[in-house]
Image (cartoon, rainbow, N blue to C red; front, side):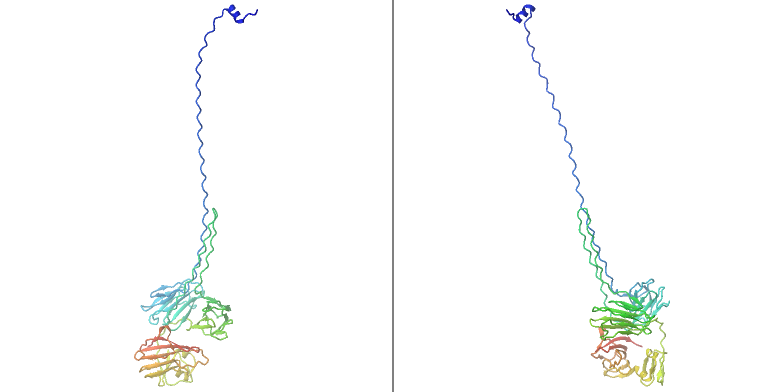
Length: 462
């Protein structure tokens, strides 16, 4: 029979009962949760790109040259600058105008009598250069004249306009300013804009004088110093001139010795289809185009160095003359034939006949009233009258013949005592009919194409 193992063991070993089970231990604590890591910093925002620079502004156009400057009134010593126009007033006493010391070719200085140079002279100091190639200063002592000193590169050349001073001409307009260039475009970011184009030059005023010694074709508004000392040559006028354009030509040598030919170049001169030969020395000519022909204006007066004014000569009388008689000893010659006729000194430098002597300067005696008409048809251009009553004076009777113009004068005694009515064909210009003194000198001029006779008051006489 089988034996239970437990019974066997209890019988063998005497093993006691099993002990109680020990109590359960408390569970251990759970470990704490680890900290979260910190967040990284946010990166910087990138900078904004720069704007592109603005394009440069275009240049302002240069200003055009000025025309003639205004006249400067001077009453004391003054050093002129190039292209000065000086009205010299010597009424308070004589003074000196100094020419520029380093002038450029073609520059000029104009001086006009602002008072009476004959009473108080004006001295022109050459300032280290020469005047008409002479190393001397000059004294201006003739009243009513405008002088122009033009520098030709080696010396100051002198030209004059003779006669009473007219109203001052208008000041030439200033050249227009060039328009401003357009502003360049603003470039895209980073690129420069385009530079604006330069404005156009303004228009020119009156140009400087130019020096010519050989054939030359002029352009509108040229001012030419023509030197014919080496021989005659030709100035050709512009082919298609505009209305109001001009060409000025000044004699700087001697046109009488070597003539200067002016070619009309297809147009007419004074309405005539012929060229013109300039043969009178010491004159400045101006050709002005009126739309159909070239008109000629001239400033008269002998050119050259101005001598000092000598003391006045005495009158003298003679009882007889030969067929040809000449003299230059006095300012005028009195012919003692009962009418006290006079001959001007300018006529005494050439041979003249007895008839011309007796009629060149005619004394028409006492005019008691009525109408007086000077007669220029037989040599006489200069007249002398004494008023003893109110009178009407008509324009002179003239006979042109081969001449194109007539110049003359009337010396009037007692013009302030009696009233004078001037005929309808006298043209007194802007100055108007003059108020006469006890001794007044009236100048007159008429071209063969004119209806009226131009006249002006030349002042009193001794």
